[in-house]
Length: 271
Image (cartoon, rainbow, N blue to C red):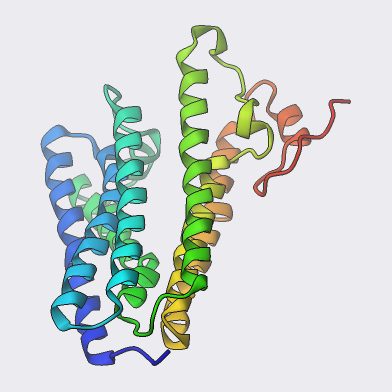
């Protein structure tokens, strides 16, 4: 397997950045009109889907990359991103501003919307571009698809299943009024406190394996993606912040004591 076509790949990076920026600016316009910045969470998944499609098209137009790998990585990324966007959109329907954004914008110096544009939308757009590097590198890498790519697709599929099933289980649990104020500790949530975040973890390591299938150069330029995503999910804005918010909930300490913090395992027996 040969290296990346650096000229075409570099041009593709620019098109991917433009796609991510376009999604974020369009979402910003919607948020300003609605007066609610929580819609940016929907744009996270949409941004990845847009980058995947644009990258697939630009790589094909340049005559670079293996067609099967190009379509595979674009399809997997788009499916993941669109599912996430639909889920977050449904979950937030009818709700006001997210408390996270209220707290952030309360400290804004000057215009709140412009501050949100800089600190939320443009930052998330840059992260979308960075995290999507395996998708971009895999699309331009040459060489035939091997078992490594299909292994990556299998890891991606397990991750997507964890996310989708975990989200569905939580949604059903919250829909029952009898569960108000209770901690979700059933199904996948009894094996890990964050099945959705663990699913994300697998999705991006799976996509990285597909990039590795495109050659050492593609692997080298994209390894930062799953590392950054792992940090965000465990030590950044994912698990760490959510558990800080949940720490005072009744039953949380008992749940945390018997349930894995991230990687799934059978729950410990209650004392």
